[in-house]
Image 1 (cartoon, rainbow over the protein chains, first blue to last red):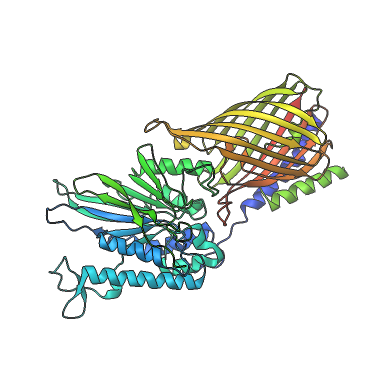
Image 2 (cartoon, each protein chain N blue to C red; image 1 turned 90 degrees about the vertical axis):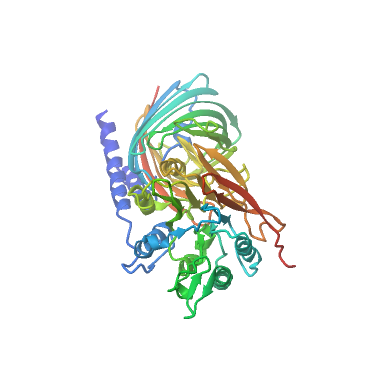
Length: 347
Length: 241
């Protein structure tokens, strides 16, 4: 037995030494200014995004205010699309924005893989977002006598704002196709942070307390949140005050598998269970995912999970219900509605 | 002594190059003589959501005949707050080049930290030869939160289970080193997250054998960008009689 222990000792020492070496292999890849020094892995993305998030996105000025309708109700809706895989054909993205504009949707959410990673595709993406913003501003804003812009619904706004300061309400998450071939540099140049949150304010309740809905966007492009994002969540960064009426969560990577034949990685086991538990703690009403290009919806532990089909004209060439509209009623209640896209790629 | 030095060098090299885990076919291969196998390992590692973790595992296998066996495994992982237990049985079919093992497993996992209960069922066939082994099967995984509400949880569609391993020496040698990749481990079955690593064993005498694994468990293997999710190590001792 002594011989056995002596033999085992050498092996255990060698193993322990190797493990210590492994734990020392991590290194800092992001400069203090947030410049990416190497890699587009999830830790680098989250570190960069955290800097931007803390500097620019934690302010309440990022929150959205819903205006009461003629009946005094604070109803609103938002549109969700996924996996547009934009190349040179901008038809489906343009259609998403025009559908939202026509329906007066408050905001647009995109579940990642917005464009395949070539600089020219991102130039097209940037241009179509600018065009969508122009249409949005023309519909909801007007210029005052000083050439500044104010919302048409708020004619008493005498100050107005500059065009560049108008926030176009388009909120994407990053997908795995957005970060390959240095795509993160292109994506982050337009959208800055890969995770963020904001509130939608919907008036006040009978006690004068603000009614707020919470929107959380996670970076799940690598099939994992990464260590830093998990730490930030555990530290309560995206938690808010936890007294929201509804919380909506957006993730590229899906949790539930639509079928046996969906060959796409999902979260590792513990991480899936961590997320399901975290969504429970956040009191999330609905989770929206993309990634697998296949529709799936189900309840799990009182949370509604929706996995959207791809809205790309290449993956889904025929017209179909590729978008989801969520209607939030001022008096309470959420309705989900599939929205048809009719654009077909030119041959 | 020379063998020891070579073995230690290979161990250190594989550990530095890679990382961590078990399910190692050769050390479990049945020699047709003994009736009982008792093994256990200690594990340690780190992953993104649980941080550092460690644990203990124990297994027992009873060979009723040279062809048929049943067994059970249990583990406790601290940090993850994970408790697992399974029962399994199998049939060994000798073929011209090695054996084909048909086995079934029923497993329960309780992820206490996240309030999740998981049941997994697996049927697999493993072809093992002198140097390589290949495993293919199907798994069904069901999980639910502790509160068991809204439809009693979720049952995944059948998952393909696959694995491949290769050794640098014939499997009958007293020590061996190899590598593997697979979408499962002793106590989990994944979708398309393919973990990989290095494995080894060393025969101490006719009854005792040391074994271990270094395993890297990524996320996003099939999403173009595999990210390291977990690295771990197992070191164990097997006793047969």
